[in-house]
Length: 139
Image 1 (cartoon, helix red, strand yellow):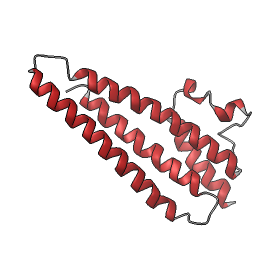
Image 2 (cartoon, one colour):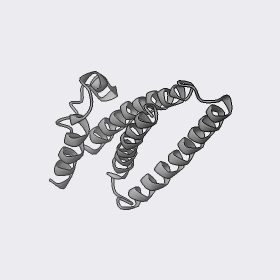
Image 3 (cartoon, one colour):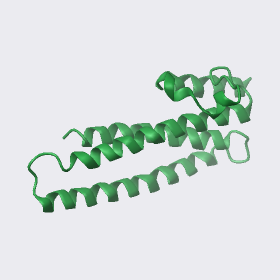
Image 4 (spheres, one colour):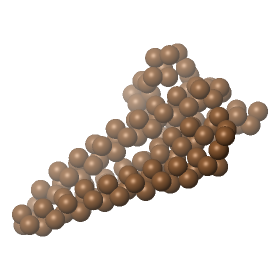
């Protein structure tokens, strides 16, 4: 019962924000309906698919932010320093995401939901970072 409630809470919030096209995933290929998934392996696969979709959006936002640096009349030196700062910020953010989600996993230590919890943490933080990068792309 708890697993079913957790699955519904995680998956309900997760898929509400994704475009329908993003749902063509490994789970779908295996015939798993992520809106109804209740087994730990199915839920984990659905969460992984959602994380992968979020990661693709993050990469697109990062490239867009990088491309925006060359727009406008900024000097070559400013653009170089800005690129370097963005690369460093992204590297540090990845380290933060990984450490934070590893920490989240300890709440589930020894439980079958640990992998899903870690992946969902990564998804949530990735979506937030994507939003932030989109703001950097439109200074």
